[in-house]
Image (spheres, rainbow, N blue to C red):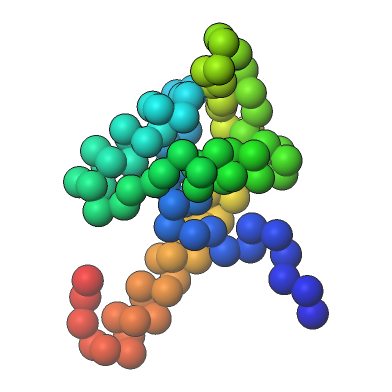
Length: 106
């Protein structure tokens, strides 16, 4: 059976969607947000970021709201919020499984 596109998000994809939860952002804002949010644990280069943004825009998870020269600003769509919420549920289920298996809390 073929895997659905974006069925499971990569860590960088997850943080890009997280960045949009509060406000519209451009690429530089997203990189800064991820760096601050993760205390530099997760870094994202321009090639990776713009590949993710293009994929998210193609899948209608985000939409472009402004263009100023080369600067493009995006916002999350309802479909993007839904995918973000589903990914949080999936990650929580993974943690619950690990806690039950190992008899520890994270």
